[in-house]
Image 1 (cartoon, rainbow, N blue to C red):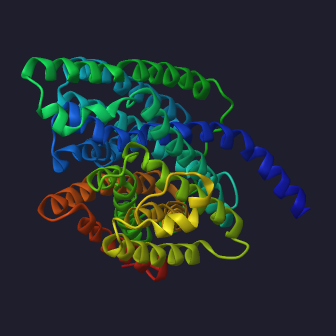
Image 2: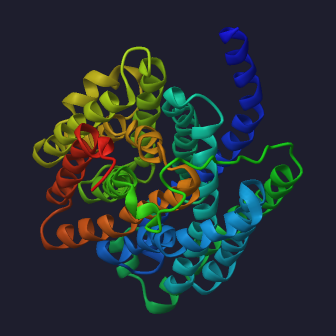
Length: 436
């Protein structure tokens, strides 16, 4: 009888998993495009490292600014219609890249990124609770890990595609070369380079419009959340749940170091002379996919969600130490790990940055079910709070850029150490707290 119920649950969750899987691929495609955009905009908008990292700030700060308004929209529209609204907002953001590319104004690029982030905010706020509640809570991390693989596969594809379609011939657009040109020639070169963005973002807007129809007219079920026994009379709302508040802070730390590992690896590689620097984000994403696969195999059969979080945080700490102290000349580690495969090797310090993807792959899928457990009617509010934690992707890379400008890019990876330490605290104690 139990087996029959489990089979029925799997069948009922298959369609939502497929549709949300498509959405997670789009999340990844849009999100991990930033890693390739940063060195691109650094050239066409003539930016230093700190200024270039406002790409991540504009994109991720939308999660903080818009999370609570978007949760209000979800309460009025329901989760399914809310996803369609989010896709429509993203389509507007994609279209805004056309005037941004035409004018070359950095502010318009940042505005377009903020609008894209706003659309993703409502999609993330709606889709993650779906994954937690459409099946047994013990395997929620596995479902989120599957979506993580889809998301990060997009992250692997995007830098390669961006490099092939937009960055081909970028070697001739070095900072030294651009500085040697007269003003008119330089302006013409930048305009030609900027215009390469227009067609891809037109296609993105078209795909997003098609996905609106897919979500709107699909048989994706609406989910209802039961009220918990202790939250009906309490007026303090989500603030009464330490596991959610601390979970949001843990996600702040995680997303910050995740974005740093994925979006600065290209800058790091460029600064030390790695030829294929524009595609280095793919290395971090491949490591994250491997981490998700290991999580799917291990959870809950060999390790609980809590233990996975402990292992992830400790591994992340070791990677930070490696990234900040390893050689930028030797590629001994990469030679051993994949040098035999024909994939281009990278210096040891850069390899440790990529391996952060493997280390922290299970942090996001482990935190969500732990933080949402027992929230009852506050699930949407708790989900919005966790989404606000994504602001770590806006603020911590700016801190990284500030430290890098004052010292070196390699030294700036020490910013990740307190991030992993807080995640370790949440894994050991924070998620267990049920009162302040």
